[in-house]
Each structure stands twice: as structure tokens, then as C-alpha cells.
Length: 98
Image (cartoon, rainbow, N blue to C red; front, side, top):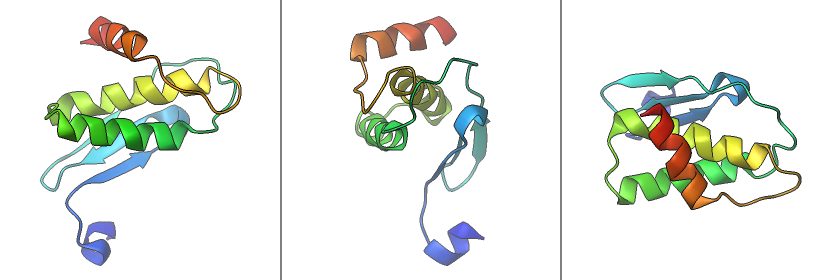
């Protein structure tokens, strides 16, 4: 329904503690997130969108993007207030699940 109305190729839905849903125009995938203590969700959506754009620019495979987004969003949710991600920690956490 959403794609028919907006005529877009990609869909990215943040699902809070349930993870991320991505659809690339031909297939959709739900990426579960790891359970973690949430301190503050401020900026999590902005972070996910920013990292998504970075993944596009770096030609990251579709199957890896959702996990990267979950990690990035989770990083800012573990910190109080509006926070930034730590790129080194992002890559370190991603390599553990890859």
C-alpha cells in the first residue's frame, strides 16, 4: 500500500525494540535487534536515517544494512540525551554478528 501511494523504491521502517524492516523494491527483510537497556530514544531515528544514507553511498549489501542500522540506533539509545554514534564501536559490534 505504501509503495503504491508514494511510488518509492526503498522502504525503511524502524520498529523500536522489534528492529528494522527494509524493502528494496523487490524483497523485504525484517532485522531483529538485540535486547538492550534503553536510556533515551532521542535521535535514534535520525541516526538510523543518516547511517542508511551512508550505507547506500558505500554500496553496503542489502542483507547487511538492517543489522548496521540496528546497531547504530541501539548505540544512541544506550546514552542519555541526543548522542552520536561511535564509528569504531559500530564496526566492532557489526563484525561480531557478521
